[in-house]
Image 1 (spheres, protein in one colour):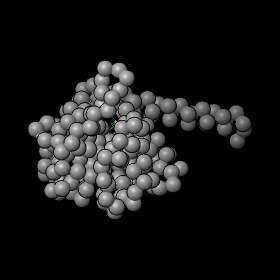
Image 2 (cartoon, protein in one colour; image 1 turned 45 degrees about the vertical axis):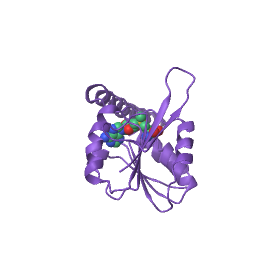
Image 3 (cartoon, protein in one colour; image 1 turned 135 degrees about the horizontal axis):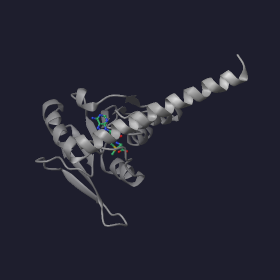
Length: 186
Ligand SMILES: C[S@@+](CC[C@H](N)C(=O)[O-])C[C@H]1O[C@@H](n2cnc3c(N)ncnc32)[C@H](O)[C@@H]1O
């Protein structure tokens, strides 16, 4: 096989990857705009650190991150505690990033390319999410049906309608907005 055909195959490969990536971005944009689903925006380091300070994650407990993005939160948590960390992500680009970061991380977490609405959360001790009002509303029913009493839910920015938080932490930002972290106990 000549050099010319190898570089042609390489070019085709890159083209296919780019097309798949662009299609996945379009699907994500559709989900965000039409269904009101959460886009991929990471929780800031300050927020992650504050949650890790505030919440006493028990050793050997089970923690789910629903819509884990690149997995920053569970990766940080797994570095600090002996915890079973599971992340669900249905968007291709952040999922692949999460897998890549996990590969290089000292402490491994489990990352699945899945829609968390289709997964059972009954063994969760803690759930962390940073989503949007619409999925939070749908999730509240799932939490009611599946989570055991005593399970802790931590939500970055978005409250669960009709649930009373055990604690609300407010983080000051330079701009007008300030971040709130809602902590619930079922
Ligand atoms: C705002 S980002 C938060 C990322 C990460 N949890 C963090 O705090 O850094 C929300 C993520 O949830 C994912 N997501 C939204 N709905 C989902 C679903 N039903 N199943 C799996 N992932 C979902 C999005 O693709 C996005 O990456």
